Image 1 (cartoon, rainbow, N blue to C red):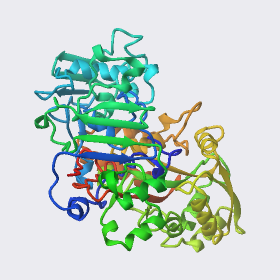
Image 2: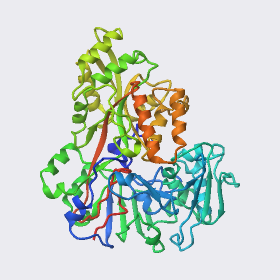
Image 3: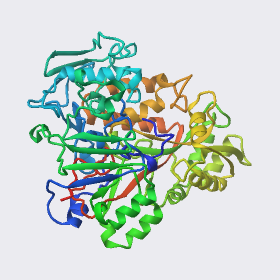
Image 4: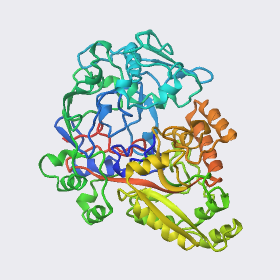
Length: 570
């Protein structure tokens, strides 16, 4: 999933994001909420969620992923889900409605799942595989667009299918031989299918209760909570217990609170101020989309009580410089290499608020094991850039007196693709004899320009976050030549179409051993990185406050945010 136009500091799921894994520190019960609030977590009370972005389109077909703020995962269970643990352990896929993470055939083109016993909806009726098939089919309907696109690409016949409202025959590539068995037929090998099966499009929907575009107002719950109010398209969402949810069938959701009250449309500073003061209801409040700024974090650091209520999360996201090699002078690898050496990542980190909020990156893959992170630095620039090496390469490229280039960035906000980072790069490259002119565009204009093959500039800031913790959704959209989109949003900005890279992507996708696949993704990252098609800059870090009565804080590397399914307020 691209977050090029919605940067991590704005994400409802930095969660998103990402990193989604190995070696990343997360704040857990022993060093945060549980200890600070005192006592063991217990059932009862109301959890308040204070967010900027509304939980709109609360329909499993329209939600991009259950990772967004974690709230959808309270209502919608799926075939598989993320492991609800801290840090790297939370980047693993585990069964949810299914008895396991799926059984593939020999080449990973057919995946079979079996449902657990005792699964029920909020009305007490049984959940069946026919409901899961129907829920997926709904996600193909034009009226319910917005969800992840993978099934359309992966399922046999998916590209032609128009959803159950137009095509009454259904998707033949999804078979339900009985009420507890479901079989998926794919048009290509996909070892990541168990990870995809965590997405909300895999949530069951009973056909008889489907109300089309109005379903979001009262979707039928398969999770521990049901929707009792949805005001202004998710601006105010109230959830209460689903009494037919059985904890014996669900090892991942603790579901401690009796009620969850989600309010959105709030100002970031107001959210952090309310969480900081922790008075009244705000003592039992959290946020899933609002980070602390550098200034706010500095104030909190001096307060032991507040500092103990800051959760740290890592999401699979990389901010980077992107080159278009079809635009001069970036068609010359030596020019791209020179810029790679000239970059001063320490100034970029400082521009984003310091090392507490951003970590320097030399790999395109996030620094987490599940992605296949393999440490390398193809163009070692040291802590502050290597201007001498950059000048040497520029001379070899025919620019002994330096050159002038234009850097396109998002002028709308102070974030990873914003003016602060652009200015930091401008200053660093100047030391190497590279004069950088800045082209700042408003967010929508910026996004349209960098995503269009015909309008894409040669040198610009970008970022990418993965939909699940694997190298596939991170590298393939950016470097697979078959994913270049000529007329529409294109994310392969280098327009790389290397048969060897494409073939390796296909070979890795055949692997159902995710650890073995991760090793291969890491090797591919290194191979592509040596071509200097991007300059990795930073991996963001998320710092978020939570209320003083909040216990059992769990932050996985899959989402990077506090897991509302684990929290207790009693």
